[in-house]
Image (cartoon, rainbow, N blue to C red):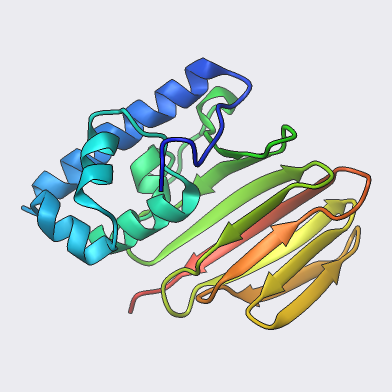
Amino acid sequence: MTKKVNKPTDSGADVHRVSEAVATRIKAFRKQQKLSLDELSRRAGVSKGMLVEIEKCLANPSIALLCKIAAAMGVSVADIVDVASKPTAHLIEKEDIPTLWQGENGGTARLLAGTSGPDMLEMWRWEMFPGERFASPGHPSGTVELLNVERGTLHIQVGQTALVVGEGCSAVAQTDTAHHYANESSQPVIFTMTVSERHS
């Protein structure tokens, strides 16, 4: 992975804020668990050099990279970007909802809310413009994603299975294998996604 995995979002301040939160919280979780950079690197399958850059706020890690690091530490991506639920109930202000992916044509993926790990739920809102594609090598075993397309047509590939999800339709996908989402149409696609990751 490189620093260029995610392109800057519309607001440079948002990217910097998310990167700072990621850097601070990964370092804090690692120290809390008494994990060396070498051990976290081994567990996550991420180079030590990349972890150093992330902790120094010099890299903008991809969603896939954050998933690997979170799983290796037994926390959720929401824990790392600081939108995880706290006791009872709390509000996440609009300006505090992070954008964690931006497509080459301006599409976005925002982590709306999430619970703490290791067993976690996340809620995402995606907007993909024509020609955009997001690919993942796969999440931990048993991860399931529920998707609903609000507008447009979404193309999903999970392993050898291809789905075309039209407007108003939903899909269920076990995403512990390589998968991708794509907008192969001429119109924007907007969809919501709930991710369930269980480690028990």
